[in-house]
Amino acid sequence: MKTAQRFLEIETLLENLLKKKTEGGLLKYKVLFFASQYENLSVSMIIEKLGIKKSNFALLASDLEKQGLLEIKHAEVDRRCRYLKLTSQGQSELQSFLSALEEEFGQTSLEEDDAISSICNFLNKRI
Image: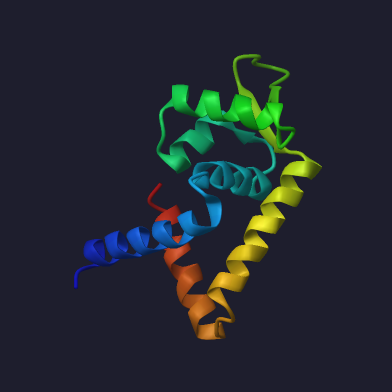
């Protein structure tokens, strides 16, 4: 199997597994995750990482802000730039989701962890 085919298979299987735990709200947890990983995450950066349209993201971000899971701040120098910050409530909800996933996946070996990290690094370099 070629690399592109493997990645398509991985993405499909992972998406299906994650959807079982999210009841259709997977994008919400992706946003919360990236906001937790990057300090001062810009809207343009997360749109690029998620591969979604700005208008779709604006609706989701507004909803997450109303739920108290995310804060949207304007940059001091250029007010057009907006940054995302995960709230403590958002961090708590993300942690609950990640814990549920850990239960689903079970224990992984060091070799499996290394393989997963390598795939993540490979993909991050191409985005």
